[in-house]
Amino acid sequence: MVHSPVITHPYPLVIVIVNYRTASLTIDCLYSLVNEVQALPGTKVVVSDNASGDNSLTQIQAVIDQEKWGDWVSLIPLDHNGGYAFGNNAIIRPILQSENPPSYFLLLNPDTIVRSGALIKLVEFMEKNPEIGIAGSRLEDPDGTPQRSAFRFHTLWGELDSGLRLGLVSKLLEKWVVAPPVPEQACQMDWVAGASMIVRCSVFETIGLIDEDYFMYYEEMDFCLQAKKAGWNCWYVPESRVVHLVGQSSGINNIKSNPKRLPKYWFDSRQYYFTKNYGQLYAGVTDIIWILSFMTWRVRRQLQNKPDADPPQLLQDFIRYSVLFNLINIFRSDIDPAQNTNIQPQINPTQNLGLWEQIQEDWIAHDRDWTKPGFRAVVVQRFGVWRMQIKSFMFRAPLSFLYRMLYRKIRNTYGIELPHSVELGRRVIVEHQHGIVIHGNSVIGDDCIIRQGVTLGNRYLDKPFDAPKLGKRVNIGAGAKILGNVTIGDDVCIGANAVVLSDVPSGETVVGIPAQIIRSKSAQNPNLI
Image 1 (cartoon, rainbow, N blue to C red):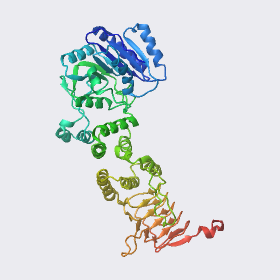
Image 2 (cartoon, rainbow, N blue to C red):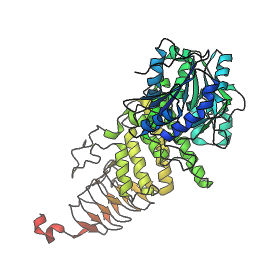
Image 3 (tube, rainbow, N blue to C red):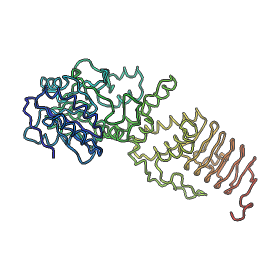
Image 4 (tube, one colour):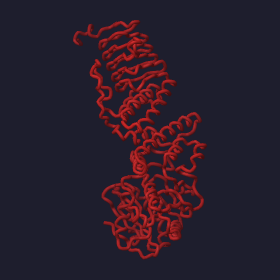
């Protein structure tokens, strides 16, 4: 149970700091608040510890006792780490229900240092503007360099600009750019960073607490959006200056180090924000827009030799955690791949693996090199298969457009035709490039190897749907042609430039035009018969 502190100041303020294994940062933040609290008598600070599990509680309480801060600082341990919203709500909720709630709450990150006069500037601004429900401080680096901390809401057009990063487009989409230049004067914005955000008590009473379905990130934007819908304005107040040691409380970004890979909860929060506020269709289209624009940016960055300042594996993770992938439970596809029981030998190409798991196997099979043309061709083929599982035309149509664009790119750039209609097994390796043509009705088993100049096609014009069926571990040499409704058994080796026109039993090696068996494993080892 969290008890409301006694407040006597006519402009009462409660500051909430959520700590998770950042005791030293929290202590530095408390030291920066000493003079600020004295300038605002009656101000209380509550440190909410999100079940750190280290010695945070001991360290913070020791400093509180040592400095005799107990009359204005409280330390509240929570039973589990529920994220940013949970940690703040655990303090705000009981105080709101008390007999004497404050006029304002200030949500303050532990990785902040409050500059002199920052708090009183915020409170005075709120007192002069009763129609304003939320206001944010100017966040800056330790050397005073301003950080972008006042934003517009994320929208489809903002995501296009975020992914494309092209000056001309940014100018055209100026009204939707999420992070505009840092304002020099106080101004109304859509939302402000939760690292230092003051909220009028009436806002919580109107719209409720912060949505705890967010673990971290996007929750303050969502909160400001709900406030705006309820008629509350949000402002940026640059006179209130707060040093923000970016990402040190979350461990994601640090101004002193390279960007770290974004955690799953960042993508989950983004997905939840768009789905909650705009619906799944809008969220799905937004994902596609960002992916296409970011891919365009990557090509331009490579051509212009620009530095890569993005978090590692950003595109891969974005696709993996996108709204569209989650719509059909991508990680455990329930589609039965063994749909054609007439194929001999019988092949189970995916064994209920999800798209991402298949791609991971393909990446390993291609020596963990995503730049290999064969790997890219296989990925596009699997993406083409996956998007056909989406029943809704509205969702499938933009993905089909993306697939066709990527398919043509692979075909025209690398000379590899591998359509989505091919029944492709696991860990298939496409070595080299150019002149590879695979009939759409072909079946290719697990662990097969296909080299440059290989054709899997039909033999007769009056039988356009006849196509080869390959078993597992078939090794096809460069320039080989396999034509017609022929079945190739497991572990078959097909020599370079061979033309295969008839079935080949398992374990054989064939060469020549037309291809002939030159070595029979069953004949050499009777035990294999």
